[in-house]
Image (tube, rainbow over all chains, first blue to last red; front, side, top):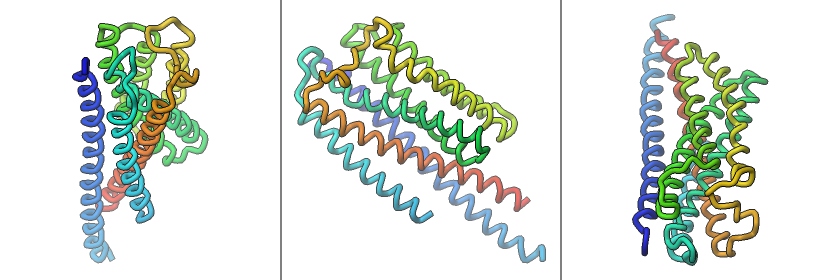
Length: 51
Length: 224
């Protein structure tokens, strides 16, 4: 089991980076979806007033 | 939109299954390599991650050509999303390579042709991302980045061929010379499939975020 620490370090870093990036993307998408919905609602409210 | 969601979930599920299989093959199935011992198992993630980085930059290259030719923003979205994912994978190649090098070569880093050209590749695509963020207009950013994406791709075949063009410490391409035992080759192929599905998932996810950012911009203009 010599050098098992290096193997563990390499795999831990790969998973940490991949999961971190995926989490970042999913969170960003969720906040954008929320922003799009609130902007659409604001636009709907604005439309009857402009007519 | 619904179809994209189903496709994305399918990719996520497939990626999960393939990674579970890959981990079983790496830690249970495949025999330990005699020369390097247990640390050689880094190979099964290091090589697919490098291949995916090359694939990502090839997509940047194609997307950039298509953008300069057609001037359609969808090609810029694909190219820039792939560049970001490619930079992440190249970072992982450099880190895992360095961790593997320490017990085998006795050093974290050496200015060997393969390592140096890989570092240059990473810097080129960091520059690609910086060009995008520093340009004043969106179209200017896309145009400048497309040029970097096309010119920068020249380094990819140099990195790939570095071990045959120069005398390097990096191992020779055993995969193409038939030097891998069948269990090792099977493990490598499963890992490659797992990382390819992961790359596709990340690319789709990143591209949809860029599209959503564009939609937010348009809606904000309408609201103001």
